[in-house]
Length: 85
Picture (tube, rainbow, N blue to C red):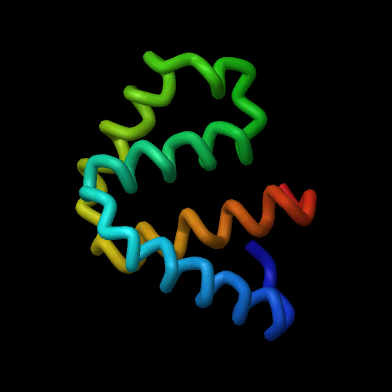
């Protein structure tokens, strides 16, 4: 994504912090990120459980650190809300 204004970066950091505090399992974070990815990619099957499961499995095998998953989810949430993706 292109360079973000500081206020949006702050919003993402705060959202990621609070997401991490919820203590979701790693699998849950992969599922949440998969949902956001599919929405951001405008995948026509973004609501289908099987499609989310496939994407979540792909994300799981990235072996991304927990805090980075939280950041990516928060970033996509805010970008989707702002209509930037």
